[in-house]
Image (cartoon, rainbow, N blue to C red; front, side, top):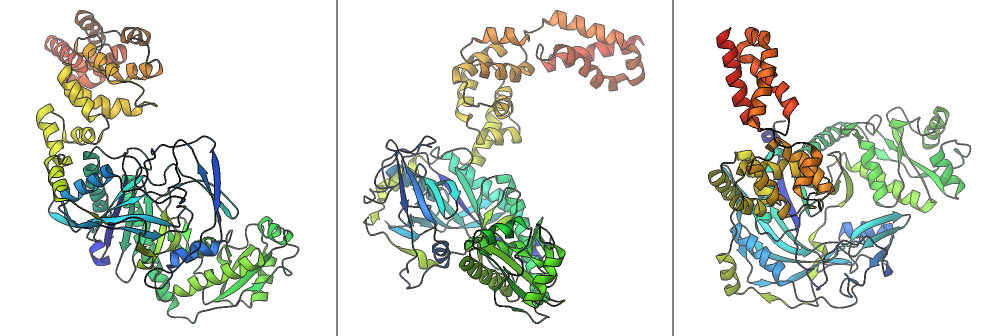
Length: 623
């Protein structure tokens, strides 16, 4: 794609959990999987913000009418999380970390910290709002020869963790609610999907450099704001894997370009949406399981004509996703179980004759399409009207949306883009001055930036650029630095072990530093080769209480003496004289493979290579 011609703009919002206590209470931030001590149920409703208007995203959540259930644990929750007690003062360590990031990005720190309430009534917060505070504005991130402007740095509380859904009810655990999040938002200065990944990688590295952030899946989430020429800003929420960022961006670009093509087509024909019509009688004998279930439960099947939409609903706009899917997702967001459209029928047990009945009842012509929803009658009327309205909007614009990141790199509709209508001041907390003395103290202990650290690792330990980058991002960085001082093992081998061999273990942290100390001391003494390390670690992680000698014995990889190694290599070379005569120096690699097969883990590869070269040269000279 020509991103410049498309006028692509991407902005990022990075949300990183901190490994401090919770933001507005003193509870620990521990994941709970046991049965709760209490369960509290609530319903939430949307209200107008300071501007006097109701946020559309909040209104959508209210229309669904869900009941929200919260799991409460005595040892890790308190009344603050249940909204039965005012919040406590903001956690000092969390604020210090946010200020540290602000200084690293050269942002303008506010003089006074004001906590705001952001209306959120999807049940993810017991209060019906999320507490958030602006810490800094502006700043810049340098990447190669470009600068990406920083828009804002905020400190906010994370939402409750969803643990279950059933009809009309959503269940949450309160273990994650209130965990501090640093939110770093960039301006839409990013000009390609790959650049978006690079920016996220650099900011993530800076956050880890503070040593105050949580690690692992779900602890950092990226939201992408994407727009193209004649398109609109779309927010894709919840991207967790760094390497998938380009895929989400490309998928959204394709979606918007496809929607613009649909808009162009629809502008050339007369379009309209028919009134929702009850089709239950016409489909009374249907064998479609979905339609049958709704009718037998006292519900209904409703349909609506979309004039001028023939062939449009089946148009692919993302990989494996069609325009009809967009309409279905809008209907689902307001409570429908799903939606059928004419471009995919007959299917799902709906026969061809039934399709003809539907077309007749709805007065669908050759240039028209139709949509169906099976549910409770009131829900059918509401949701089919919403889906019809979304179809008609396609002829005018691409609507601004917040979309959910799907595992396959696509996204699905969640809600309208949130507006400033949902923000209002916190009434239970006073503004807090940012003391200059605090900033002076933080400036004295700013961490090294990832790029500086990588340069130091390369220079000090002789690591390659790739290995240094991996090591800098590793949870074992500090241990690596200690072990290089306290053992005689090659730093490259230690780094490779932590970034490759340890990563493959099922339990990364079951082995302690003392295990690795013994391992690398034994390696440097020649008790086994570096090739044996992965196998030893695999076995030791299963039996961490055993001593290293017993593990080495069990694996059967005790080091072979150099004398025995020379003897073995000489035998193999003698057997392969004809190969050496034919291929000369090119015989090295196949012979290396044969030797390694015999002594893997028992001898160092460099030593094997040296002896093998000498033996090949000897045989070659005689020939």
